[in-house]
Image: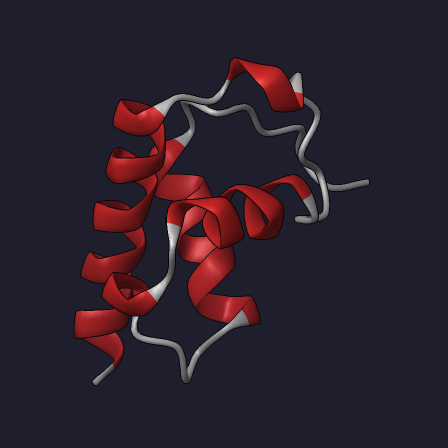
Length: 71
């Protein structure tokens, strides 16, 4: 069973997003789409309503770091 993740698990979410969407530049993803992508991750167990712009931005930056490393 995958580890449960929450909105504040920025690094883990970034890693999982990079694994699931390796060809997507995170900086091109709108926050509404990012919100959906995160809530659809295996192991995501937080309240979808607990996200906010600062959390989504932190997730986007963590994903961007993973994406850059993979280039």
